[in-house]
Image 1 (cartoon, rainbow, N blue to C red):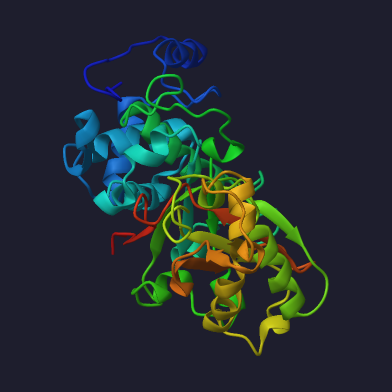
Image 2 (image 1 turned 30 degrees about the vertical axis):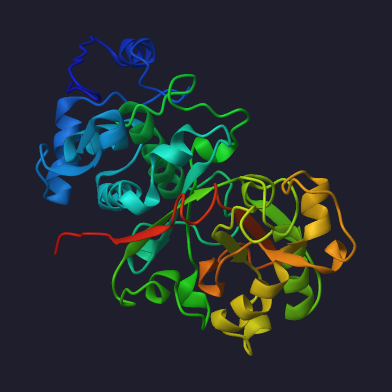
Length: 355
């Protein structure tokens, strides 16, 4: 089998021996992997119509060059099918974009994961889950595509726990973190279309993210959004309690945020995504008094601080709104970003499918 990092080549006689050898070489995320034998990697490359030596992108801070062959080998190990490879390649290209700043979220003490959000016709073609048990187990495409991204980070990007990955706590999304948007079941503009792509294109958006925070709210859209804004404004996220201290306008790390909304699309028939973002943006905030008490801002609490607020999201467009999750209840999730928008910005890339 071919190397996953730089020069290592492994050989084995049987499947169990191969799995154990992958453990010995440090190629796994702690779970068993599919041995990336040459002929299986070749099948993936043939399906995608890409050359193994083609460079997908670089991680200059770690002097790493990530090729299509390395991406394919890690996709094999993750349990992907060949048809999943174009999605994994697009996600890899996106996270290697300089504005995503992969070194930051992949090495931070905060323990961010790479959330992959899939849009377009490929969602139905590959049966990528956008509905019930959205972030949970049970779907091969979601589980293996997200896992492939993590293995690429470890094996090709050196984001190895205890080495360059310095997470203090981490979260389960660092095993796999991939969802799709149920765009065919809502009148809302799909995420990728809102970010400049055509509806008929397939695309992935990568987002450096904390774990999802479930929001339970029963009622009308205003009540649901009120609860979402409250959860999004909580102390303790990277956006609200990290960063330099000083002036209230500059002492808080404003970042993007992802929000998933589930349930019946009928409930939102009078709302557009722009309406939802316009409601949420001014309400995702924290008082200067709270930020001072949490020592985000260094000065003591002063009269009037409880009535002064700091926004935690730069612009309404920085709320990545996704219609996804089960149909049975109007439940949502809030996913704070790893850090400020200038530290890591969500990136969307087209999935290059063969004709």
